[in-house]
Length: 252
Length: 252
DNA sequence: AAGTTTGCAGTTGTATACAATTTGCCCAGG
DNA sequence: CCTGGGCAAATTGTATACAACTGCAAACTT
Image (cartoon, rainbow over all chains, first blue to last red; front, side, top):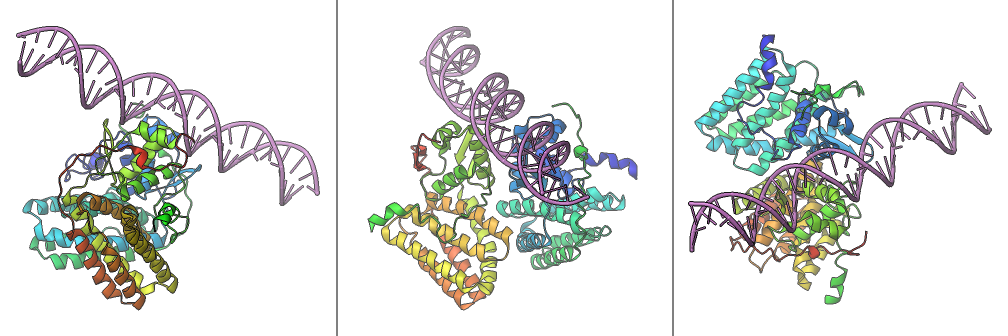
C-alpha cells in the first residue's frame, strides 16, 4: 500500500503522544535539531554529509543563531561532528566507536528492561504492542527509512518505562548513534528480522520474566551488532538538504 | 601546610596532563563552561544559584554569545537548568534524581572498573596512586573544596583507563552531577573516608582482581549515596559570581 | 482596603553585522 | 608539466543591536 506512505509523518510517534522522544525542551531550535536527527535516523542524511549553516538557515527560515544552537546540541549528542572553522558534518562513526556504542547499550538496556519487566503495567504492554504493529506495517510496506527509525524508537519506548530517567536519556543519545552506524555498515538487505526479536521482548515483559527479558535484550543487541560489516568508504556528498522535508519552505 | 594551599590551581589535574577531563574540544566557550563546572564541583556555586548572562559576560570579558554556548552545554550535561525567558540556574537535583544518578553510576562504573582492572598497565596504577596522594593532601590540609573535586575526578581517571570512551563520557556527565548533590545533601562533616575506599580500589586493580574491584566499586558508590540526607531547602542566592576566580577581572 | 491593571526596568531570545579563518584557484617560476 | 605562493570567495566565529518576554511596583478601580 503505497497510498498510506504519505501519512508517515503523522505516524511519527503516535505511541508517545505529542511530547516526542527527545529531550527537546522548549527551545526554538528544537524543530531544527529534531528534523536533522530524524533525517539521520532514517538514513536520508548519510554519515559525513556536510551541514552548512547558511543552507540550513534557508531551509528552516531562521537565522544562523538557532541553526548553530541545534548543531551544537546534536554535536553534544554525538550525532554531528563539529570541526572548528570547518563546519558541521553528520558523524561518521568508525566500527570501533560503533562497538563501544553497542557495548554501552548492552550494559544499560539490559538493566533497564529487567527493571521495566518488573513494574510495567498492562497499559505499557499495550503501547509496546501498538508500536510493534507500526514496525510490522513499515516492514510489510517496504518503507525502509521509516522502519529504521521505528526500530530505534522501540528501544526508547522501553527505556521510558524503566524507572531511571537518566539511563533513559543515555539510551536516547545512544540509539540514534547506532542507527546511524546501521545505515553505514549494514548490508542493504536485512533489518527486518529485528521486528520478530522485538516481539519476543514484549512477550517476555508481558510474562514478567525480568531475567529472561534481560538475556533476550543482550542477545538482540549482540546479533544486531554482529550483522554489521565494514564497507567501502564511498564519500557520497551527493546530498542536498532537501532531504529534510518541510511543510512550508520559505515560511517561519 | 597552609602555605601550599595557594598552589591548588596548579595542582588542578597534574595526572591528566593538559587535556583536562571534560569533553571540551576546541571551542572558545570552553574556559567558561569549565570554570562554572569547577565552581559547581567545588561547591562554590550552590544549587539554585542564578547564572545571569550579563554578569558572566563581565566576569569573562566576552559577549553573551559565548556565555550562552557554555550555558547550553552545561544544561545538556545536567549541571545547569535553563528556564526559557527566565535564565540559567545551577541545577538543584532532588533526592530522587540523585538516586537515579547514583544508580546509573553503579551500573556503569562497576562495568568500567572490571574491564579496567583487566588491562591496566603499571603506568595506570602509578597515575592512580599519584592522584590518591593529591586526595590525601587535600584531606590533610582540610581543603574541603579541592577534595570534593578530586574525589570526583578520581573516578574519571579510572573511566579513562577503561576501553569504552562512550561510557567514560557518561561518567564525565554523571560525576559532576553527583558531586553537586553531595554539596546539597551531605552532612557537613565526612567526605573524607572516601579516600580510603579509593585506595582499596586501586589495590584491587593493582592485583588484577577485576571482580573484586567491581564489587568494591558498587559498595563504594552505595555507601556514598547512603550518606546523603535531606536538608533544609535554604534558598541562599547570596552568591556573587566572583566565586569564579579570574586571573585578570576586567581584562580580555 | 483589597484586588486588578498598567507601565517600567531588567533580562532573555533572535537577527544581523563584522572579523577571522579556511579553501580553492590562478598564475608565476622552476 | 609540475610545484609553490598568494589572492579571492565562501564559511565560520564573535560581537552587537533590536525585539519580546517576565516580574515587580505603583496607581487606579470598585
